[in-house]
Length: 492
Image (cartoon, rainbow, N blue to C red; front, side, top):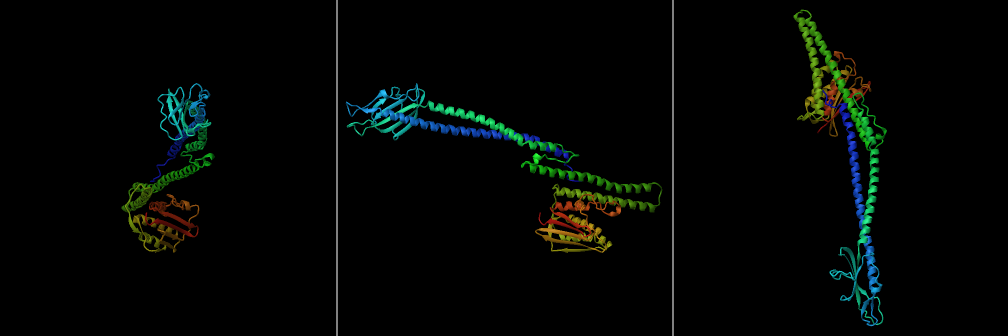
């Protein structure tokens, strides 16, 4: 009879216990993400460090090559016997930059006269065409990589007497680049080892921090695992409540459990109350039929007994019809049923409800005053709206003193249709006001057959109003009467 009976605390406990698997997955994924980010960062730092180191070392190496080239150029002099002839003082040649591996050098005067060339100068080396006063290139000679520097238009530094001023030199000097490459490789090795050590330290710290940070989630999971049909309290730990990310989850779980607890309690109360309400007419009907069968009776006695049995059957049928109507209204409100609706006039449905209850009002000398502020149309089933107004009017008439007036009004407010039913009865106590929409709840604890109703009228009305996307609110003060306000959207 209710759409919420599929929720059980065992299902909630299974869902909450699944948080343990989620926690492990979150931890693993975060650790993998941190390790990957640290690896990317380490690789990036290594690349930048190697690039900068190689550039700086080659720059220093080029400066050293330039100094060697200038020192070689300074050894070119003019001959004392022939002032216009250049020669090279080979005795003053500086040692190579790398011990055991000779350097390469060549000096050419005026682009055509070879002054000197090292003994290990390769025969097929090509320094390329002139490209300005300074040119750097890398060659492989006998399997050894060399870095070569060529300086052009260098004047002869040893000028004496009438030496020609137009002479200039082109100096090419090359030295093995292996020391630079070895230094770069050493830097790469040291940085890589250091990055791996830092990665291990940061990974261990991240693992420890994640374990510590996810500890409140584990505690919350343990608390959720203790939920059962006999224990609806979540009892979240303080560390979970104090965690910024877990506080909304804890509040949401608490609200969900409270709602499920209410639904579960209402379900049990509904079954108990329904059984009680069904038991009374069934017991009376059974007693009536048994009394008819105890001894032979006249036709008038049989007729009277059968009429009484029919009254009990009518009461039972009315109860079953109300329970079925409530179940359908709740299914529709939950979106499990679809209906094709056409616009109806709210005021017209109110008038039909007044006509239905006019006889009941006259019996109690109650006057019904109805006012409508213009026609208001909304898509609805007129029988549903008439049933809502009938339930509200019936309660107002039943609890109003004889000779009083029940007022019913219809008006629009900000795109909403508002229907108010006001009586001047004894009102509803504040302790009973939150429970008036509960199924089978009646402020009058008597369950005598002459009290009328089963405590389902307001429950059905609330379910129908909510199915149309509206609200129903009670306003009451003891001794001052009750005002029921129903608000429905004009367009859904």
